[in-house]
Image 1 (tube, rainbow, N blue to C red):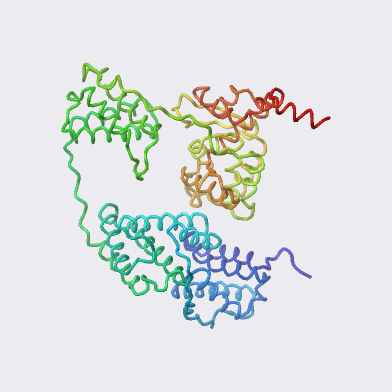
Image 2: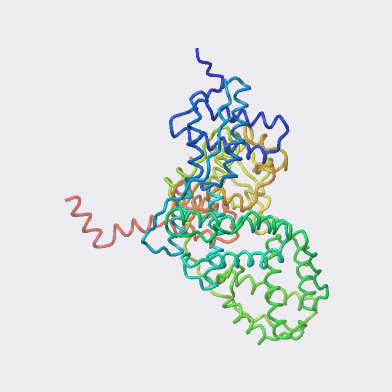
Length: 569
C-alpha cells in the first residue's frame, strides 16, 4: 500500500532537504544556493515525465549537463558547482532511504561542447539583438533577473553608441577593454568600492554572456570576449579596490544660499512635512542654487525677478537624472519649492521683496490614466500567485488582493502594520497617507481580501518573522517591504500573464476607482476611499467610465438610431 502521507516525489523531497539544511543552522541565502541546482534538475526531469528519485538514471544527469551548457549558457566551473550540490542532495536521499546509491557520486563533469559553426545572413541592429537575446532568456530566468540583464546590457549599448560603435559586428577586444576602463573610472571612484566592484563584475558578465550567445547563434563569426582573461580581471579589480585611498571630505564652507536652503528645509520638516516632500524641496533648491552659482550669485539678496525669469527658462529644458526630459509636473515641483523658499525669507524678514512672486507654473497635461485594467485582466493577475507551501506566494496573493480591494497607494501599503487591519469590522486604517498626518483615514476592505490576509498571517507571516514584528507585509528576511519591491512583485506577475500594457501597483488603484464608479458608487464616496484632497483628482478616474455618454450616443445619434431600427425591423 502506498503511504500518501510520506513525500515520494522529488519536489517534496527537495523541500524536506531545505528544512534539513535549516536545522543545521545554515543561512537562508546559503540554503537557496544549495537548492537552486536541485530545482533546475527537477524541472528538467519533470519535462521528461520523471517525478520520483528511483526513476533517475546517470544518463539523465549527463543530459542535464548538456542542457545547462546549451540552454543556460553556464560555464564549466558553474557546472562543477551544480553537480557538487546535486551530489549533496542525492546523498541526503540515500541517508533517508529514498535511494539505494548516490547516482551523482561518480558522475563525470562534461567538457565544454564545441560551438557549431553557422553564420546568419541577417544584419541585426541593437534593438533586434536585445529582443532576440532577452526572448531567449525569459523562459530560463526570473523576471527580476531578466530586468537586471536588460538594464546592464542597455548601459553597454549606450556606451557603444557614445563611442560611435555602430553595431556589435564592429566590437573588438579593444572596445571591451575600453569598456572595462570606463566602468572603473566612472563607478569605482564615485561610489563605495565593495558594492561597485560587484556591480562591475555583474555588468561585465552580462556582456560576456551576450557575446557567447551571439557567437553560438552564428550572428558573429568571432567572439571578441573569448580571449580576454575575465576571471583574472575580476580578481584584479577586487584587489585594486582595496588599495583605493579614502574619498576626500567635501568642503564644509556653505554659501549663504546653501545655508538658508538648509534652514528652510529644517523649518518645513518641523512643520511635519513628509520626507518625500522635503527631498523634493531639497532637489529643487539644489538645482536653483547650482544655476545661481553659475551666474556668480552666492547671496539671496542679489536674486532679482529677472534672475528668476531666466531660471524659469533654464528649467524649461531641464533633463532628469536619467537624461530624459523632465515632465511639467516635475518642473512645477521646482517652481513650488522656490516660491515657498522666498516666501519664507520674506515672512521672517530675511528679504523685503519676493523676487519669485510672478513666477508662473508650467501647464500640466491632465490626461487619462493609462493603467486601468478590465475585470478579466484583474482576475487573471490575482490568480497568478500559486498558493503553495511557498510563503512568498501567499504574501503576494494577499498583497495584491489588498491593493485591489482598497485602492490604497503603494507607500500606504508598505506602511501598514498588522494592527491596522480590523478583520471583524472589515476596515483598514491608513496612518501614513500622502499629504501628511492630517489626511489619515479608515476605509473598508473586502471579505475576499480579508480571507487571504488571514491566510497570510496564519501560514506565511510566521515563516518570515525575524525582522520587523509590526509590519504587515514583509520581505523574505522579515523586513518591511519597500515601494520598489512591491512594484517588482506586481510587474513580475503581470509579465507572467503576458500583459502588454504597463501594470504597476497604481493600476489596482485606478481599476478599483473606476470599477466602483461604474457599479454605481457616488464620486464623493470614491474620493473618500482613495483619500484625495480635491474632487478634481477623483474626476480623472470617472472620465474612464463613459457609460452614460455611450447610452445617450446610442439613443440620439442619427446613424445609431437608424442601425437600431434596421436591426429590429
